[in-house]
Image (tube, rainbow, N blue to C red; front, side, top):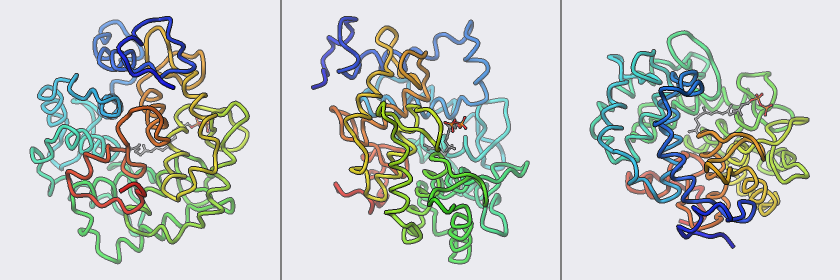
Length: 338
Ligand code: GRG
């Protein structure tokens, strides 16, 4: 069984059997301290809003949200909002749906959504919907099911899903359905290869707009189960290697369609445990690799979804804490525990 005591600061703790809670907390809290000299920090500078969401939600799962400076984060997030309502990934960048969703998610977790002009944000999101139901990610016009998810999740989190009338909802459902392939998985646009990441976005979006009836749960469950490899880890599509991040993209989708018991949870948990760095804390994509905040977050999400260890519950559709969502009265009909 796992060790939740402070003693897991001790290097002698076997990371293949224990979740290194204190080390992961320290890893996330210290991420911002290495900015001056760190190459990776600067090449991901434009993704800071997503990074903040991954780090903050990791701390939520580890019950350590109080370790972050709430006011500093809120002010920084708000400083990334543009006059059209969208948020950029960092202060001097352009707005995008990806960073807009992260900004809303961060403010919700810090109980500061009321600091936002939510009507303006909703107007920005709605402005990106196209005639065929798809969404642009930003003014430059890339289309991807990721952006559909960001749009409906963002509106729903702000309690503004009803700004999408039936016609718009029907078009969204139709666009997602056109991204479904013969193998029951989903791609980023119609005709594109099935990928577990895109499958999460489509299942999540369909759950939010209440159209899970469009999914053949057994067939999709089969395709998602096929993602588990003999080492216990999951890949994102056939013939690829395992990566910890699929402990979210695959497991969340399985969870929403109520097929999580179709994969070997124990083997997956052991795989994630092995990807922990027992010196620095943090979780890597594969055992022995250098950790990063993206894989740390999605590895912890995997533990949480599989109810492993004493962690906060994360919702498989919104990728936010269940408690946070309930505080905002968001309905979670796919959550069997509620
Ligand atoms: C709120 C959790 C959350 C998400 C917001 C951004 C987004 C919506 C969803 C992203 C979905 C997605 C496409 C995830 C996949 C990310 C990933 C690991 C891509 C790697 O692709 P390849 O081709 O990797 O490099 P493989 O494993 O296929 O070789």
